[in-house]
Each structure stands twice: as C-alpha cells, then as structure tokens.
Image (cartoon, rainbow, N blue to C red; front, side):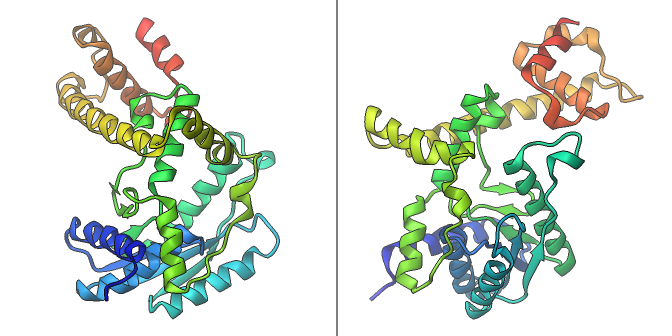
Length: 299
C-alpha cells in the first residue's frame, strides 16, 4: 500500500521542485516546526536520498515570544530525527521601530530577519538550494494583501516557485494537505500563536477575509487567486524581458537613462524603466510607490 494521499502530494511537490533545478548538492529545508514547513522537511528527507542529494535544514528563532528558544530546539530535534543533516538552529535579530528609521512593520521586519538568517546558513554550509514551505493559501493571501495596498502586477504575481536559490515546492498544495501529511506521518507540528493574532493583516485575511469571500462568492477562491498570480507572473516576466531589452538601448555609457527616448514607449514599459533607473540611482526599492513613479513620469 502506498503512502497517505497527502503525504504523496507533498512528496511529489518536493520531487518536482528538485528535478527542476540543475546542479543541486546540499538542499536545506527552512522549517519553523509549523505544519507546512514540517511536512515539506519530511518530504525532503524522504526524496533527497533517492535523487542522490544531501538534505539539511535550518530553523530560525525570532525571539519575539516567550518560549521561542525552546520551540526552536524542539524543531531542530525533530529535523534531526527525520534524518536531515546538517541542521542549523539560528537566532535572528528582528529590527524594532525605535532603532530603525525605515521600519517596515513587525511582519516585514521579522521576515527580513528570517531571510537574512536563512541566507547566512545557506552560505555557511554551501547549500545550493533552500526550500520554503509556502502553500497555495499563502499565495492567495499575498495576492489579496497586494490588492488591498494598490500594488502593481509584479506584487500581485505573488511568490515564484523558484527565486534564486529558493524553492517553493508546496505552492500548488493547500495548507490542509500539509497538515494532513503531518498527521499521517505522526509528526506534531507547532502552531505559532502569532498566526492567529488579528493584529497582523495577513491573519485577518486568513481568518476573516478569505472565509467571507468563500461564503459570499462560493468555493474555489483560493485556487482562483493563485491562478491569477500565475497569469500575472507570466505577464510581468514578459514585460521585464522587454524592459531589459529597452534598457540596453536607452542606458548611456555613464549609466544614465536617456529620458527623451522614453516617450516612444507605452506606459507599462516607461514606468518600469523609470523605477529601475531610480533604484539604480540609490532609491530603496521598498520606498518606491506608484505615486512616486507617476511623479517621475510627469517630470
């Protein structure tokens, strides 16, 4: 008899993700101990040896709540038990509003600290890829948050399945499948209380907005939002390719953008070129809004 269907689905996602990337050596699972990343880590531990790969893990303690160090230790112990090696357990320094002038908010600050820690672990142990446990539900939440902020197509395109060294093998799976996989494998995931804290916008989207949309508009909202992200991502990548080609023609030898030539391009290309030029001039990407780009266009 084969594995539980949820276990099989997670393993298939991981196997496909690994098969799509060349020259893999050591692959790390970024695992908080939560159900999504724990199911992914277990699947990586199962699949990697069958593909001739080494599989390790990294878990990050943000230090934002009581008992976080103990939870990180429990997660690391579970990852060792799954057969992952090496397992890095790191403490991240999360920026706070009082000592950072461009404080991005608690969620973004924690995410930035987490990625910095994961990247440091990957570099230290020479990992060629890092797996992240984002699911289709996370993708749908990202799209809705982008809509609420008035973001452009690139933001609404959500998360890529492959982004540099980072792989997201579960983007085609629902969160419930990851939880079912943990249950079938006898794994006891940690449920982060911050994920249920309505102070965070993502929690409100997860616990209130998406269920209300399902109730009022019918089932399938999460899948529809994920499909929207896929379609917008294809469009955004095509536009980025056109912008790359245009930039090669318009950027002078001193890296300045030939502004007069921009008038020949449609808005979708012109605004992207201006944004790229502003970032190249030293403007932080996160501080640029559509309003700023519109002002550059008018000038």
